[in-house]
Length: 351
Image (cartoon, rainbow, N blue to C red; front, top):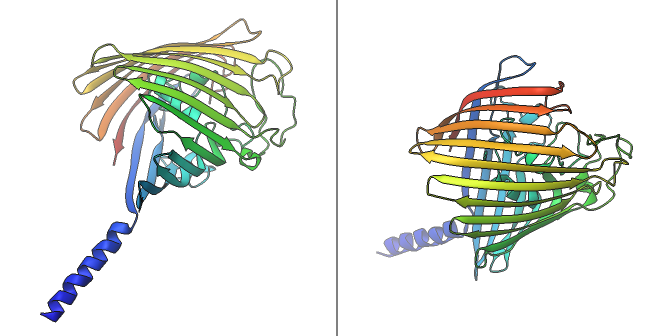
């Protein structure tokens, strides 16, 4: 009898220890398909970022939680780290606390501006050339211009994030990074109308900071965002999204970038995107048009895109995209100027 009681006590003790431990979740996405664009041969690539992540929380009592998240980004066709040169935990590596005050995290991750603006373009922040997120939606802005070439354009290292609680649909998100997080990897900023006014390898001239305010109430969502990077380039966006019906979502985004700290002439760029998503059973149509208008350049960047996603299950969908982009400047990942047509076909699975 004593042994039985002791066994029960031990089981209870171990159960209490287990409950106190961090609850860890392993997650990820795999996205691969075929791609073709003007002046390039057919290739195997991705539409969305491929991730392998670990995240968890620990209940500290009195409404306080500790949390962490680590996320690896990789290439689907080779299995290598994303772009072959990026950090192992390129996606994010953050630890923090959450409570009634909101959430505070420290480490590496998307800036609040980049995280918010992606929800107001029709490809829902998927970094494909078929969408608008990486170029037109942000008016060509780069959050981390001094990091080494091929690094991410929308993340900060050595930063602190704060997310306020949601109050009546409103939320404020903010972040500030140290100058060491800017990298100084020797990449010159390539912008509108003239050369950079600082040497390659230049150090940060300011601490980057980013802030957004969002409002979500039923079918309506609004956002306003502002960010300054390490070379004091500034970007500002306002956006709106509205679910006209459960099937139809409309969205609009307007952005302005100011590079006057690093460019002597034509430092400002304006851009806008109009988009729609329409759901039909397991299928979804994505459509959008956008324009980027740099100072002093007669020819504007104009883009039209159309996509389709079909869900085979809650975790797997197939997709196809077609995009036509006309620009007087070199298109992203393409040396040619003029009109660039882009097509992709692939499959995305999450776990």
